[in-house]
Length: 361
Image (cartoon, rainbow, N blue to C red; front, side):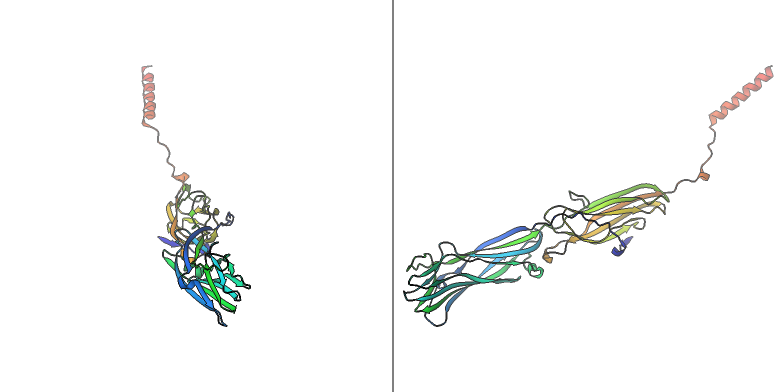
């Protein structure tokens, strides 16, 4: 017989031993990309409005595999240039103006990092040069956006890099060079390294034991007498230690003799790593019989982080209960012992011997 347990009727003895907050584990995916190359490395301007060149590049970032755990957040970082890559504002002596490199890194899952990678001004006869590049960084922790980053494929993102020449006077040239020396124009590519760091927690790990995985628990009440005080057995559900998410008990079902063998199991949410919830099982002694019951527990990761990376654990924990209730024999039904045949024979022989002696006398 299957019995569906009403969770509202089950009162949990649910004081959890809470651990410190779990620390997210980083997992970094990295690569490189060319932001400006070929004709896009230089642009000249002698107009009243700035001139620019834009180069678009797609990069595919490996998604977060939920086998690792629950995705909590991610940080995307773009690091352009190096010490031998210069942004230059070139021109003849009278030329004045500013060279700028702007970047937009966009994609699904809320990625939209934008900013200025470098800017330099020619405000004298010497060329303006600079090799100190700014990084772009964005942290995403919105649950809906994070779901786009979970899977076994790629998230395709787009880099849009714009080189701008904005003159004040004469002709100004903005370019990417390999030297910062004045009047030296040796073009080079503008490259960048990128990284996406996934911060995650391990999945919850439910167990009937505190320090190791135990998914089946057998509790035996033994044999008790009809009408005895209700015996109780204690047990606990643990979320094993580690940098992991909390544990939820979502539902449970009972099978077999659940009227005789019950528990005070109650639903709970967010049992922290290294935490414990204690409960009791009981045997009803009002009816005689040999009883067996099984409770199947459905658990899951706590409702935090990317929902698509959370795990459910249906019928993961099994609680088996056993007990035997017997009737005590009543005093009226106790039989009077019957004398053994040998003692009776002995009594008869003694009587016979005594009779013969009297006759002889």
